[in-house]
Length: 360
Image (tube, rainbow, N blue to C red; front, top):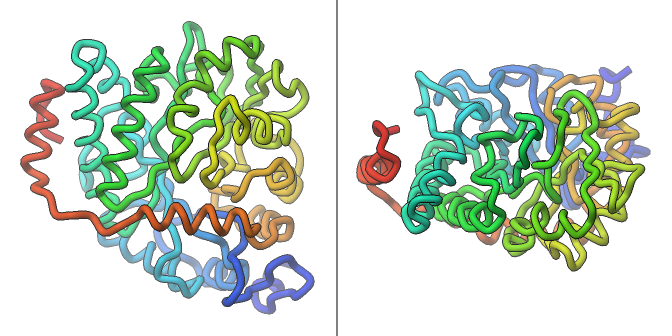
């Protein structure tokens, strides 16, 4: 069934390839280290906003550069965004021996607890080095920093990915990270709006439900995102916040998106991605999941696992980006300027000095 659709774009589908119009409001993954014939045809016809890389897609720098070029060629856009989750620590798609290991975000929070200025400097340098590595392979968006505030006893899915349990420290170090990425020509994505730190289950496997009262959420969980509301890109979590909407996760809740994420408690006006549609937190078919996310007010859905049948279903339910989404994306892209030259060895040496560790 999908093979026919790959060969002949169906004009009845939303945004069947229109080179002059807005792109489809989705970011897709790919199955392996190079595109298949079917993937190239599908991406050409579906015309997603962009792509996302995972560990399965990253073997060597040369291979990643070639894959990124293939992805952009498939949609006929040299500027199509390519995303990755490269936080450091255990969340790193590009790994040794071909790429350096970077510390988890908690390392900067621990340093900042002793010396706030040193923590901030280290976070910014670390992000600048991350951007240098990513830009070298053509990656233009990093799904980082994590701005969640973990609480005692929460599931370790966040854990040391978070800077700190102090919302003000999280905000300070997250901003430094965003500045370092942007200085290196890579756009940051603050995540996971409106907060994943209280989750006692892993949203990759099941739907977390947060019972905290609204006052506690506003004082703690929402605070870093409120402080970073001027950032260009954000990612919304698959987490139920019972005090706001007891029936739907944030990613599919118009109430959460309108009243909290876009509303006064946070006031985020950048482009909003969903977390991955294929995560176990969401129920139902992929088309329905995509439709629910967009109906809630998010701008772009992420589908990351590269499974063709699922991608076809998602594409069938996703229209062209809205006018507001197009404007938000253009505003984000305007921030992504070519990186100025830096001495990477000097930066690595200074980071090692600040952290008291060997150079990355």
